[in-house]
Length: 413
Image (cartoon, rainbow, N blue to C red; front, side):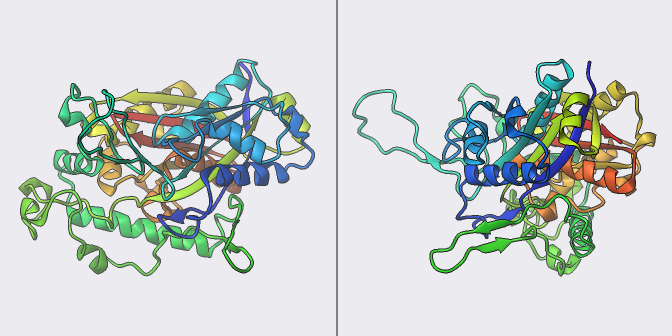
C-alpha cells in the first residue's frame, strides 16, 4: 500500500441559510473550491489529475446528479479528468476523501482531488410521482433541505425521528442538561471568533465573489454564522426546537425530567459551502513541488441504532485509531462535527480517556456551520492545517451521520 499525502486543502467561507452565498449554485461553489485549490499549486499540470471525488448529501437539484463531474468542467479541468459524486449524508465530504485516498493507496491513482459541497439554501422541493395516471387528489411537495422525505412505511418509525429529537434522546441517555449544551455552544462561538480574529482560518479559506443584480460582486471572506457576541443569557432564552414548551415542561431542570433541551442555539444551523483537497502518492507529491500538510493514516466507519445516530463517531474513531496504531493519548487535535451539542457531549461521555481540551480548538459546526456534503472535507482540511501549523502531530476528523453511522479519518504529520 502506498502512502497518501494531503498536499493542500481549501474551502469557501460557510454561508448562512439564505445568506451571502444564496445566489451561488452548488456546482459553482464546488468549482470555485477546485479552481482555488489548483491555483495554489501552479506547478501541477491539471491533466495529471486522475479523478475528482466529491461528497454531496442532497443532489436533487442544481448539482445535476454528479456534481463532481459538473464542478470539474466548470473549474476548467481538462475534459479527460473524470469525476464521481459520493453520498454518505453528513459525512459525504469525508467519504470522498477516504475513497480518493484508498484509490491512491492501492495504486489506482497517483493524484486526485477530493471534497464536498452543499447549498442548503438552494435545495429544491421534490414531488413524488403518482402510482396511477391522472390522480384526482392533491400532491405533496417535500423539501430536500434537511431531514427525511418519502419514508418507506415499513421502516421502524423510531429510526426516522427528527434528528433533533435523536439529540434529545442522547441528552436523556447521558443526562446532559440544557445548561451544559448551551455552555458548549457558547464555547464553540468563542473559539471560532478567536480563531477568526487570529487568522487561523486564513490558510484554508478561498473567499467567494458573489454576483449581484447591480454593481460589482460582493466577496464573502469569513464564515457567516459565527456569533462572537452571543451569551449564555441569550442562549437560555431560546425555546426547545423539537419538543414543545408543554412537552418540555418549560423551566424543568433538564432531560432527566423529560424536558426539551435542544434549541436553535445549541445545534448547527443550515448552511452553504464547499471544500476541496489535493491528494497524492509519493510520485505525485514530487510533481506538485510542495511539502504536504499531512499524511492520511487510517479511516474507520461504524453504525448504530438510527435513533442514536449522534453516538456513532465513538466506535468509528476507536476503529480508525486502532488501524493507525494510535490511542487518544497520541492525539494533538480531534475535530468532531457539532451537529448538536448534546451529540458531541454524548460522545465525550463514552470516551472517558479522551482529553476534551483538544476538541475543536477553532470552534465547530454550531458556530461555523454545517453544509452537509462539505463538512467532512472541511474537517479533514482543518485538521491538516492545524497539524502543519503545529509542525507535526496526529489528528482525527469525524462526523455523525443520520440513520446511525459514524465516519473517522486519522491524519499525521
